[in-house]
Length: 466
Image 1: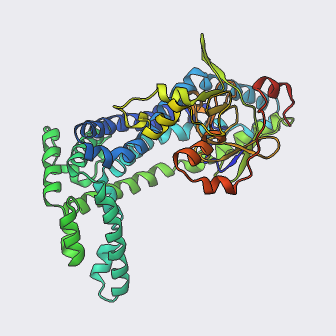
Image 2: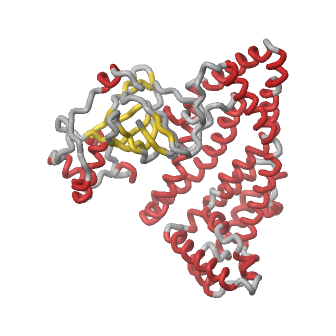
Image 3: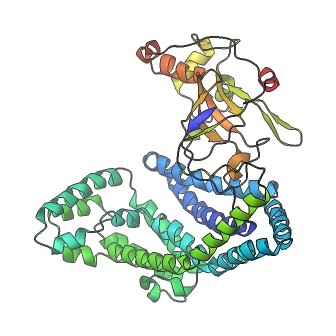
């Protein structure tokens, strides 16, 4: 069993909404982040300092990039669109058999289809704006933390509030500039502004785009160069100097502030226009779900995840993702060592861990001379479940859930237990790291550790799951 707080799933969306996720949400995210990640990696490979500064940022951006790629791949491989269309046809036939049902639910699919088609342009533009211009550039994201400062600078009666805001920004700046490399952000901003320019209608250009013409690529580069050369935000020394002697005029005239204000203004406008179709979509979805539950009244419909506590149960097992490909249900420290890659920060094995491995100094945590590192189950988890306790039928902690396999990325929309797996860190590996690597034996001594032979997956599968 896994108990935790899964974020959000969308298991009951229609084929139109699923297609929108594939063609719009995921496609835009992948396109934008592919470019952003390549520019980050380019500078990270050139400088150890930049690699350290951007390692966490790169991993954070890559997380949902991988997720979107995997989700689209999984939805296609599972033929989810066709399956949803089959359900919709079955439901339509059921509604048409009875005039009362037809009158009550008949407009559900037309409402959904029309809403999705009507908001297509707004939705795509909003995704580009968010991914490329709001989240894409660090400097504009940091400026957004300064919202409200200009108003406080202009209002002489709010001295205490101004002081509190300046103290807040000083603390935020220390964190921001510690891992900020302007040259990387400058390249990313130029690329993001160009991508947005090329990808959306000019009707949704922020006001500062008005001067970008036929030679827009050179114009954008010049604009960004000017911004980074003059903005108080592009340099920590300039920003700290501003905080010591802040004034509204300097802040309001800063090119980065103007740029960020234009971006947010357009974003709000697009959201308002796109939201005009939300009521129709929500009404269509409600009618669809109500009709579906009435048609399949003998079926139990569990609610989508919504960040509240959930418990999922399943069994430990491996899987076969493709013809001739078989994955066991567990991995070992041997595989951990075999995957070492000194050129990839994510695959560097700590020296002490290698020493313990070659000495076979595993303490009390080995099984048949091996350290089991991870195991897979068919538990239904999603984003938000990372770190959730994995417990056995006796309520004993046997691991911590932390990820899903590549095939599980489509699970938020379509769950397939045969191939979508919950990846768990084995508790023995966790204890091994706490004890032998970290030397935190005091924590080990505080725990009640129950030892015993774990049942094999075959034995577990023989037992009924309640």
